[in-house]
Image 1 (cartoon, rainbow, N blue to C red):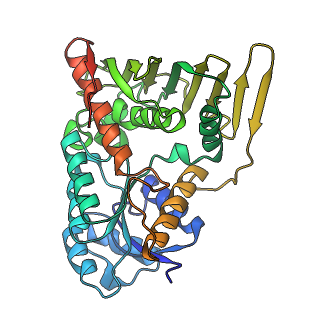
Image 2: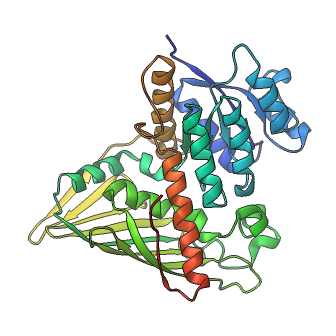
Length: 367
């Protein structure tokens, strides 16, 4: 009976913040060991990273093609691969690993186009493989409680949802010296959007998870305030949900003085539910004549966050259960699966479409 897993990583070499975040989150869970990797296009960097993490040299690879060919033919192949590369490479890397029978964990956004995301879903489902997208904010324990508050109708019927995600790190043209800013603002690497994909995807996923609301139509405005850029650094979106509720999403990376100001207010017929990442383990429920505070003790972890740790704990638990014979798939799993990745890409594409057409209302339609 399986109790532990092995995994590999593509991207995430020494000096990569996101690579360390993923590895540390998995290490904290304690049920999966990194045994293979292609951490960089620079093989020396891959070798140095592998040495640091105690990986045997024969399982360190010059590129992901070499890695998937070798790992898929091993008697004890890796159980899953973690993809922490730039957006434009997610599709091809995930595709080849899925084709070779290896489960995938991918950073968000899943791909750079909706069509690619849909193809990965089809491939994962047909091959009976799990594909997790690391929307880590919903991994905070208090967010599951927020979901319960809504499901239990404590705030009544949802009428209006207001979400903001403000950062200030792109207020100046730092992309000429900052590699993270450089690739995120390059359409050849980031895809058709920057802010909408980078933090807007978290907003869309958070609302979907907590409320279960489906977007019927939206009207978006994508602004580029630093004029030398090809992609947006500020976004405003009006939302109509199926069932009659409405919403506003505001995402900015040029908000000077803001660090990671991510929060939501959900207004219902009986009360209001509020959360902000500045106090990530606290919910506020406002009623007409009273206030309810809900707090959840959460473990503090260095060099990652509890959301990432819990994201991996859910995925690893489901994958172990699947290896032990349980019927776990991308539709009944407990983590944010490829389905969330597809929905996120549809949101991104529709926001871009609306803005390019002069901020008109566009329908999200069906699958």
